[in-house]
Amino acid sequence: MKTFSIQIQDRNGQIRKYEIKAQQEDTIRELARQRSWKLIAINEKITFRWKRSSALSYTMLSFLFRQLHTMIHTGIPFIDAWRLLLQDIQPRSKRLRMERAAVSMERGASLAVSMEQTMLFPVLACQMVQAGEQGGQLEEILLLLSEYYEYAQKQRQMLFSSLAYPIFLIVCTFSLCIGAVWFILPVFESMFVQMALPLPPPTQYLLHAASSIRAYSWCIAVCIVFVIVGIPLLYRYPSWELKMEEILLRISWIRSWWLMVCWQRFSQVLAIQLGSGIPLLQAMQDTAKMIPSRWFRQCMKRTGYRLENGTAFSLAVRQGGFGTPYIETMLQVSEMTGRYEENLMSIAAYYRWRLERRVAVMQQCMGPAVLLVAGIGIGVLVLCLLLPLFDMATSIVE
Image 1 (cartoon, rainbow, N blue to C red):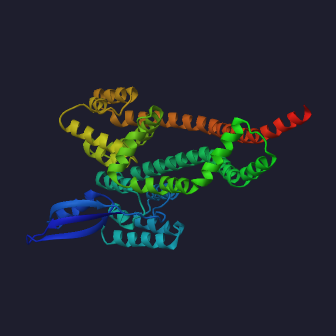
Image 2 (image 1 turned 180 degrees about the vertical axis):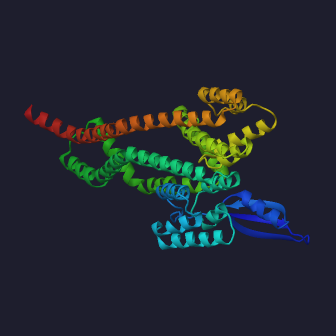
């Protein structure tokens, strides 16, 4: 839930300021229209929260939507089906919110509005349910949402499983290096000084580097804290988020990977939106909000302006410079045949396959690669420490 600071002119002509919590800016504009307010300014307030999000997990969302679809299909009234599923919601605080949503629906509120008030459901789910209610396709939308969140959870698990082992190796190697710098190398350094051994260049470089790290450890600690804490805080500001994304996307392989992620999700959600009967421009605007990239959202916003001026979708994407030859070709086919939904699902399936293949390759290669780098680092460390001893042994034999 976001916090917006608004300045309005009420029915009496008085200027007032309010802070309102809502999931999106469109909700504020709709509220102002209902209360006959004239919006003067609306700004999203940046808040920093470290507590865990209270939204339902993807696994629970998939389960909930699938069970609602099944129960409605068998003829159970929606509110009864909703109440039957409340016992599976944990913890109690979330279950109470769901109960309040049921009461709200019994009083005449729509499902989408009741879901939004709980603050447990993503914006995408609320918008899709609203479209399903308006188009009379609620049952189909619930099934689509179940499949979408089921696949999103599989994507998360695949990514975590591919990164878990390499991250574990990196942490272990980093801990070993810290221990070597602070505890092992000082012992060898004092031993070499007492023995008055001439040190080979690799050993000298290693000991000098270790001394520098110990001397400037506070600077290194500050840099690490800035990277871990400062960059995520700066990323919450739209201008900084956009600049950092633009810098990262100058790297070709990151840009290729990120385009696949964004277009896979955008195409899938846009196809679902169009299948619900939502017009293309509105569906594009709503779908772009679901993409976790401000750069991509800005590109899609400019694409929307081009479409309003009469430019074809494929040409607008090409002019924006954020498409690929495959996407532009599929969009051209959609424009000629009018089968946007089917071709967008093809785009989503294609990039889903490519992402799964890349993640599988990364999972196979990253572990051995990190292990190889760690082995080389440890081997260099041990060799640099043993070289003076080898030189001393050689001189004694001679």
